[in-house]
Length: 337
Ligand code: F0G
Image 1: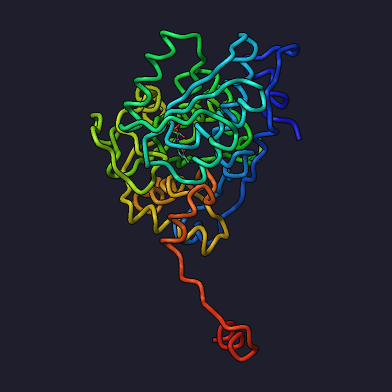
Image 2: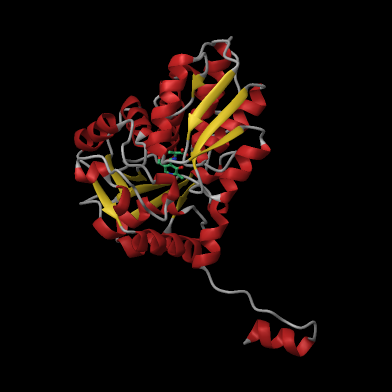
């Protein structure tokens, strides 16, 4: 299957002769969620962005950012990250043959993401600081050195990520009323709104932040953001104004969800819909359940990353394994009890 640049080139800033760095991203499943629909009392669809090559929506933006970097003759890329951007940048850089450095908050990213960045050969820098400090530093770094910044402050990231809205518009032939999406650095909600408006759609945009990391909800930066949803542990989003513009011009809202609500939605999706997403991804569903989406009859929740990224949280949240002796009686007791 073609990646998003090949599929949507005429609606992206790439000419036919431009180099393309792709891993076949995009084209992710959009599935109806019957149990969630029942609980939320509205028709809910889930966009499974964890089905992208590195397990998160970042790949849509990264194919665009890396293709542009190659076109510009860049030799190295850098990003600050809570984990997924790092994993995606590392993979696409490996694919392109570029050097990659990622700056992550020390001890604060899920192990799957760390493993990805390392195995793809990125230089992984563990900052004794948080994501917001890391982003500030990489912005300074690229002012001093000819390194391409692949965070979502890079507009190619937004261009690539807007294609998810194109896919949703194509898949749902009748009107979509609302989109529920987790918000961290606020690039993705900005990208969806751009994609929807370019498709002539204006669903209400509902952005959800973790209660301990909810600057858009408070209207002020959060100095020490905290949440179990490590991917959205961000206190000063770079795309603050654009996110608020998407929310207000679409007639949506921004609200906070507690860690308990996030984990409840996370377990509910896994246990009743068969869908394993990471905690940050469940924030959109938690928001739908906790706050509702006004009168919306058809809703899409974006599940931004795969649950395997953060196996540790899954093991903490799920049931225990059953030890068993290798005998038929013991197996019977273990299986049938
Ligand atoms: N969900 C997941 C799984 C994420 O990794 C992120 C962001 C978001 C939601 C929020 O998206 O930042 O565009 O508002 N992760 C970034 C990273 C910050 O470094 O991987 P956003």
